[in-house]
Each structure stands twice: as structure tokens, then as C-alpha cells.
Image (cartoon, rainbow over all chains, first blue to last red; front, side, top):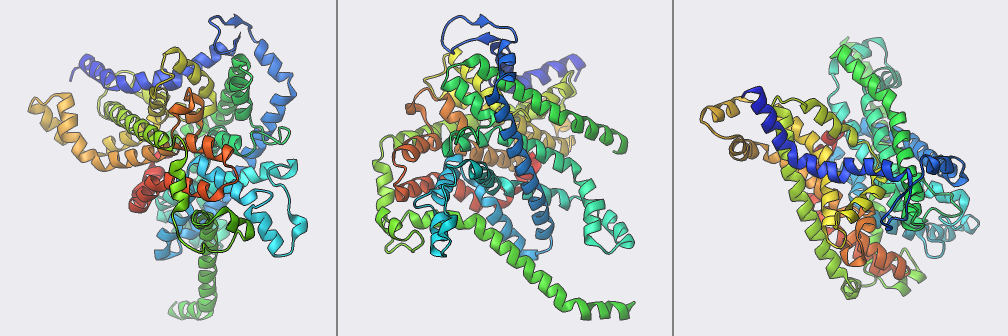
Length: 295
Length: 286
């Protein structure tokens, strides 16, 4: 095939994907940047130019900062619980033999459930009156520990985070299991000559080899906290009590679809985009560079 | 050496067995934590509200299907179901066709801009949904799509395009190019080559991509609630949340029956193709 011919057919084959992806994923990101510099209620035919005022408003707004901290706290808590747990389980699963398949299916099951289903299960568990947890506490004589789990500021976010962990940690188990399976045996044989401590091998061999997977898991986690978790939080607490579970996703959603303030809502979205990219750009470049050096 | 290994066995035998036992105990407890709540929902779906208030843990006294019948008396349930089927099927067809063609081109044709294109698909994958949801709503309205199921179908197809292209490209790169060269010598056109030669070989990976996308579409809640212009266009997750969680928040047996029924396609698929799904997800992540 000549180069021109190849270029033409290459782009033609990509055209449907580019059209759908451009119009309904990448394009909207740019539309968001445009709207974020305007005042707009979402339906009026004209947008009033506002420059960067939406952004400066947000920076001066306590609600935005609260949401940023809630988002980061949820992300950190989920990362610190999910990743070590999933890694430990993946390492353990490699050693249980035939039962591994059964356990893996059981651990992956919650990931197959929809937002609605998981939210309903969480309501069943943590409802203050007939919820399983409070009933259980009563049955074993610990009435003093009964509380309105989702309605009080100290427990709402932890319960939401627990829901996120329960729902998706199976995916990370699968990810780490797959990564462990492709690891070169020689590294372990070499390490065994040096030390007998499984912990040291984990620390100095397994973890460094897994850092790409750990990194992409962290990226998925950010995406999740700002993606499917938004729907989950909307169903469980709607951001309450008093903003204690209000992530940036909830703020953007409520600004746009409740307050009809599309300018500020878009500005939140764009700040989220900048936040995510600023968090992932350094490790991405680093991993890309080591790949060039060693492979 | 034989001595020391024999001694090792002798001393570490019981200890190893105990570690082994503890490991199984750990995984059994963990499995109960993940499967337990789902089984509890199954049990709830056979009981009555009264029974649950008296004792939430008791087993159902009888296994009747009243709660399941009650789900169908809810208004609009049939409509949500039809919306779900149409949306998921259409989005699946779109994403499969478009991502197959694009992945094939990126993997097999050396054209100007293929790397850039691939990198764009890749990077966009780490853009959180919340970044595009507000502008997506605006775009859908301005294209006049609100008030049709296309308002959901096209964003769904776009949402999983990057992952699908990524998985399929990996597969297309792994197959031998001799067969295509032979096809070319026979003056077989590009589309004919893809259709008659590549697709049959690619079927296993296409099925994996289809399963992953099916589950993600069938379960999707957030976009469905935001992009549907009215309840008439809700899919099952959005519809069940709107009608059951808010209105009938206290009728747990009916809520249980409803979510369980909505999970049937995914659970059946998961039971039948567990290994494919797990492998697919593992390959979907970079």
C-alpha cells in the first residue's frame, strides 16, 4: 500500500470511532472549557462572557474547598484501604490452589452490581431503624453503639468509602493477580538466594515490579471517586449531612442541575480535569521514560 | 541437603498446614463479606415488610413470589426494561463496529497520525466522567437528541470507545500478518479482509469486549439519570432508583425483588463467562 493510500484508509477506518468519541467525549471537554468562562443558566440562547470570574468565585468559596478536601480524603482513604488489601489478596490467592477460582468469583461479585443495587444494599445495612448493622448491635447488646450512620457527620463519609471499597476492590484483585502472573520467575529465584523473608521479597521485588499497576490503579481510583461514586453518593446522602460527603462531582452536579448555574458547574469540571492531570502527569512521564530505558 | 530438607519438612509441616488453614479461613470470611449482603437481599425478597420489622435476620417462612409480582405492578417498570434493552443493544453495536475498525487501523495500517490518535484515546480514558457530564448534557440538548434514547446511546458508545480500542488493538497486533498479505494478493479489499478474515479470528476478543461493555452499560446509573430528559427515557438502574429508592423507601422486600431481577442478565453472564470477564478486565487496564 502506498503511504497516501494507507493514510487515507487508516483515517477512514478510524472515522466512526473519532466521530462518536469526538462528539460525545472529547468535544464536550472543550465545550466545558468554553462554558466555564460564561454566565449561563443552561437554556437561555445567549451566554454572557465572564472571563475567569467563575474560577475566582470558586477559589473564594468555602463550598469548593470543602468539596476538594472531601474528594481528596475519599480518594486517599480508598487508595490506602483498597490497594494494600487487593495486593495482599492477590498474593494470597496465588497460594490457595484450586479454591482460588471460587474465591475470586466471590470477591469480584460486588463489582458486577449496579450503582442502584449497591446503594440499596448500603441503605439496608445502615438504615438507622431497620438497618442490619443497628439490628445486629441490638441483638448482641451493644445498643449504645447504634447510630444514624449516614445521617451524622462523623460516620457518613467513612460509610460511603466503605461502600466504594466493598463494591470495587475485586477489580483491583483481578488487576494485581494478572500482573503477578506475568512476573518473571528468575527475579524471585534470585531474591530467594539473598533472603528467606517473604516480606522483604514483597518489598524489594514485587512492589517495584508492580508500580505501573499501582499507578494505573490510582488513576482508576480518581476516575472512580469522580465518576461512579458520584451517583452512589447522590443516592445515599446527596452530599449531606452539611456537605460532609459533598465531593467535587456532587458540587458540579448540583450547581448545574439544581441551581442551573452552568458556568460555575463547568468551572468545577475543568478544575477537576486540571487536578487529575496534575496528579497523574509526573508518574506517567516517569513510567514512559523508564520503559524507553529498559525495554 | 536431603537431610536439611527433610528436617525442614518435619518442623514446618504443622506450621505450614496452619498457615494454609488460616489462609482459607481468611478467604472464606472475605467471601462471606462480599456474597453475604447479596444473599441477604435474596432472602429479603421473599419476606414481608412485617416479618422484617419483627426480625430482619430470620429466614423467609415461605418462598412465594408476591414481591416479584409487585415489582411488575410498579408503573413504568416495563418501559425502563425496554429502554435498557434498546440502549444497551444499540450502544454495543456502535462501540463494537467503530472500535473494531479503529483498532484494526491503528494496529495494522502504518498511517500518518496513528500514534497520536492512539495516545488521545488512551489519555481520554483517565478523564473522570464528572468532567464531561455537564458539557455532555449541553451537547446532547443542542444536537436535539434529548427526548430520544440517542441521548444515552451515543455517550455510552463514546464512553467505552477508548478501552475497547485499546483491548482490540492489543489483540490485532498479536495475530500473524501472513494471512492478510495472502488476502491482499488475492485482491481482497480492506473491508472484505476485515470481515472475512480478521473478524472470525478476532471473535474471542470481540466477545470479551462485548461482555465488558454490556455489563458497564447495563449497570450505568449516573449518565442515565442526568442525560434522560424525563422519566420516560430512564433505563432500569435510573428508573428503579427513581421509583423505588425515593417513593417506596420502606418497602424493602419489593426493592430487593426489583434490584435482583434487574441483575439477572449480568449475574447469568458472570456465572457463565467468569474467566472471560476477569481476563477481559485484566487486559482492559494498563
